[in-house]
Image 1 (cartoon, helix red, strand yellow):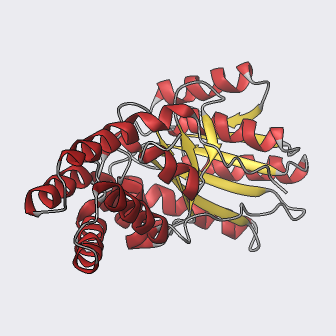
Image 2 (cartoon, one colour):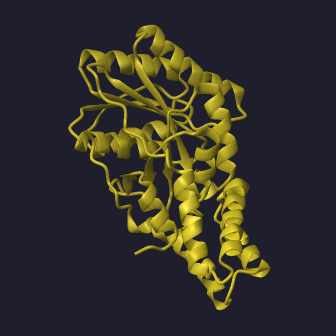
Length: 305
């Protein structure tokens, strides 16, 4: 059983505190009125919670106010938190188990999302939970990416299979899986090239990796996890839709959930696609990485101590 961290790192509280302070500024009013609702709506949209979640929160605040006209802003804040908790009620998920064959995790996403660093953090997480890990440097598109993952592998004393710059990424994945089978690794983590979701040739490369692994082993445990930059806001939803449609996503890892992140976009992604949120990254250090917790996320967003 993997360790489950209920408390998120303090860094995630930064964007939440800004949102919380924005809502707290509404306490100057005695009651909820149109101006207060407009301000709450602006704060939620600015934090990237998206139209659906924001409208649901505003609707429930209006309903509660109708029943209790004297309702103050603290109640509104509690309603907002309750709606988000409900929206994320199925977001937590157990990690797939290792069952004798290597568990293959393919990290995908757009350029700059932090996939390579996340691959190293994820490897360290699995290793801390008693699993042997092999890295696959499947980003053959950028020479710098290959060097980066080799450097991280050396730093963490992790084994790695990599290819030449400009080589066939699927061939690297093939070799890595054969090595993982032969050497009985528990987990194989493949770092893939960053790509814009509109680039058909690069999306085809992801599909090729999946096909070649399934051809090698019809029972391969292959999981595509999308790495999303938490500072990109609602733009992440559109790319997530494309990736999910092209290769199928089994999980979400959100990076850069620190002071630059607005924090709410992952609610929209989960609501739209029902993809579990697995991990949050809150910085560059290896320890700035934790399992996702709905309660921890909501408490951090709304400034709970």
